[in-house]
Length: 198
Image 1: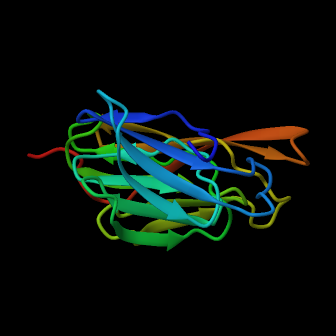
Image 2: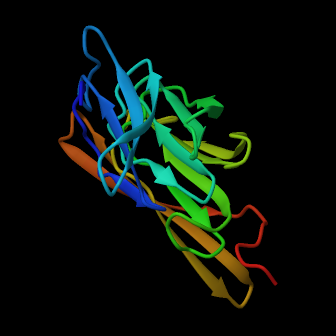
Image 3: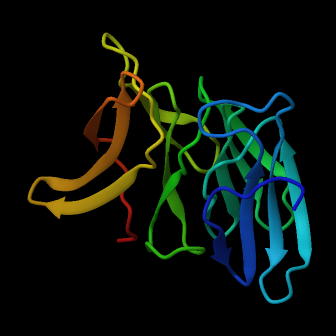
């Protein structure tokens, strides 16, 4: 490839999806460039490519219809999985160098209906986006009122059904003071929407 591949590849439906980009997690290249490419997993033939303004240093997330990823250009993107055409993009306010996480109805990679896209931006912004539109269902700025954190940690989402209903907890880590200290966060998503068909 013409640019380095940073994140883990995503494999779904016989296709391989990879993010590419120059620069690194801390800073952009003098001439920033990034892309996501889709390959035939059987023979390595490139099917499509979508270029963005800065590095894609993350693992892309895929569901039945779409590919989602963040970039150092501060945006989160959604592409049509079949042809790589853009469906939406959302400015998250700072470089995105952590992989997004999809919450799906059936919980299996590469298929099913996605009901939440969790993304963190490097300067402390945490988002739950609607996978269909890119609109923010909620946002949280963990750097508000304290020393600025750096978020390079991809979130993990745990779903539990308890006596009072369904709980979603979002876990992610951060670095402070030029990575001399850290913090682990657990945030509860209280948005009311089921994750399973009744």
